[in-house]
View 1 (cartoon, rainbow, N blue to C red):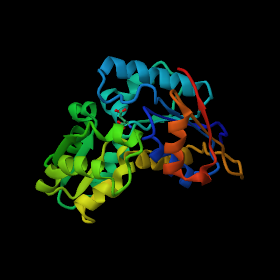
View 2: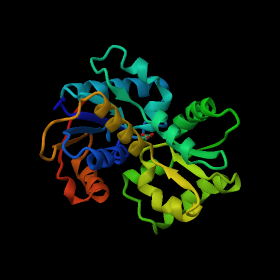
View 3: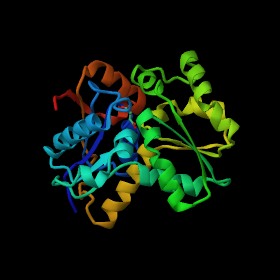
Amino acid sequence: MNNNPIGVFDSGVGGLTCLKELRKLLPNEDIIYLGDTARVPYGTKSRETIAEYAIQDIAFLEKYNVKMILIACGTVSSVLMTEDLFAKSKTKLYSGVIYPAVKSAFAATRNNRIGVIGTPATIRSGCYGKALRELCADIKVVGRACPLFVPLVENGYTAKDNKVTRLVAEEYLEVMKKENVDTLIMGCTHYPLLKDVFADILGDKVTLISPGAEVARYAAKVLMQKNLLTDRQTQGQCRLFCTDSEELFSENVSAFLGSDINAEISKCSL
Ligand code: DGL
């Protein structure tokens, strides 16, 4: 057993999709979450810049002696090789979101037509397509970059009836309808905050995959298999850090997680 916290990071609030699932599956674990809100979005930046940011994010979490680090950011997970990122780090247990999301999408599809939406960097990397084709050579993968979704989410435009979000989503998802995908990987962890909008546009026959939730499930399985879960019998602590104003971040946190999470939120510098 291991009572150290689990570390989770993202460029902003998207990784809360991972944190929420972790809390559900492993309520007694302590969690340290970092949202690099001062520098979000990562998805429009160069590979070098994304690498520099990710290394700083990891170093921050390691100060808390985390037992595992989850990269709850589609962009970092797609643009960089996870093994390279952790090559010089003391953290031996880690995961990005690609592998868990791809496995789940492959299990869900019935017609082998899978859509992937993500940041420009994620879609440009083609990594979801590559990983899916390794599982099945003749799978059809339809990618679409959706650069406007991250700012919409970070600014709280997440309600199903928000007209601006709806209009943008209709335009982005048109190709998914045309290509008849039956499974959609929401390849940026911010996007599940808009899942009600997507479900409304695509209908209930399309399965939506949340990479943040998938990596949380994967982490729970690995920690259990390696006998590294906490032996604490009480609820774990959640400490959330952001690099910009705590105010907007706190609003987003309570809108998404609800008040029952009882997390301490602080501003930090990297
Ligand atoms: N949550 C991040 C991702 O999954 C947001 C991307 C960004 O910062 O551009 O890609």
